[in-house]
Image 1 (cartoon, helix red, strand yellow):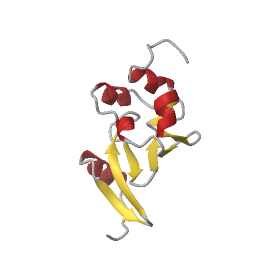
Image 2 (cartoon, one colour):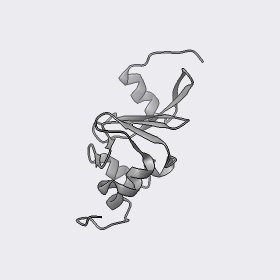
Image 3 (tube, one colour):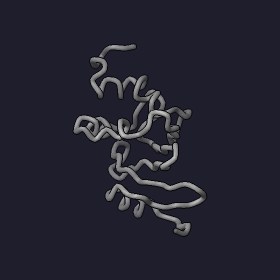
Image 4 (cartoon, helix red, strand yellow):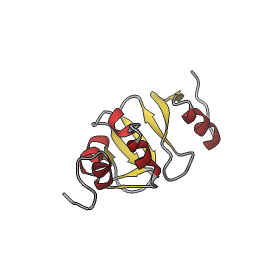
Length: 120
């Protein structure tokens, strides 16, 4: 499969199909719909170990409320990823899926591990 450039619109369409977008430079990229910061937001996940979360999930924070809605509907994309995968958000420092699963205060409450309004 050759290298190709995709626009945000075509990435969003690919995300609606929850499928591979491209294979290039040794990366096999899959677009995963994660509306939150915007309606057409996607995560780009390399089948290896990288998750580009854009403005949806950050270290210790989230962007938008829709990620919570996805988790509430049992579509928790965090649960589906290996906890060792590196999380590369659009802002802030790098993290891992496992760290955010265990320590992100929003994710911890949403998955029912701690009641809302409590800490640590």
